[in-house]
Image (cartoon, rainbow, N blue to C red; front, side, top):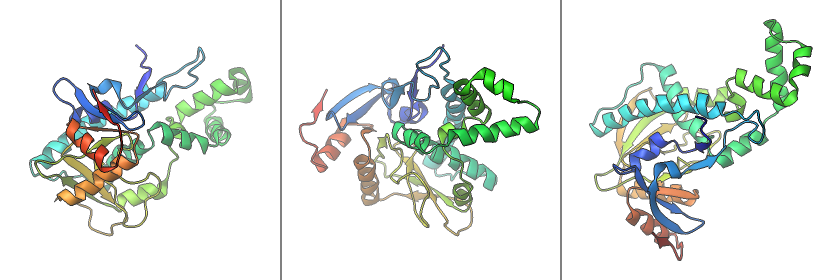
Length: 287
């Protein structure tokens, strides 16, 4: 069955804020509504990643093959990390390549996943250049000729080439500089006090996507109690540490998550009501 509801905040992540019935508290800031709903109903948009969505050639390959596989892997890996951190055991990376792979998948790819980020990425994309680049590679391998391009037609040919390049152009532009920054970063796992919780938002982290500034930090909540923090260009020995988050620091992180997001979720309605009041979001209703 083809999936047409695409989650830009994956359900493996939002489920950690939900109860046993997969219900989660949500605040829609624009509508000023707080309510409880199933995680399948939020942080999603129909056909967000569908290619040729209004034609008979509609394809959900990005959702099914790219994010589907990515989510399957990250669900297992991050679940183990969260459990380790909560038990006081710092997750270890086998080598720098393993750490780069995790940060690229868990942080960079997630940042480029939302509707606004994806649209910006596609807007900057030079599709014709990518077509020619991949076509040239196919020519060298004896897999392509001009007749094939003419027969396929530009729209279908374009999508075929994007598939061959593992849809990299549709997700984000490859950046060796950014990956180098990941390789040089120190990874810390931050844990809250027992009574406190991170928010979950449609922005996923409290920083801005793009190229991180030197010594910049961003917090990516992996659960209500645990967040990962890559410190870019840290100039420190590659390692993993567990760092307690003070109540003041957590308040600042949650306030940034709240301010820059359209949709936020929490383990309780009281946390959302408190933030709405703090930021003078008037006439908020709860159902």
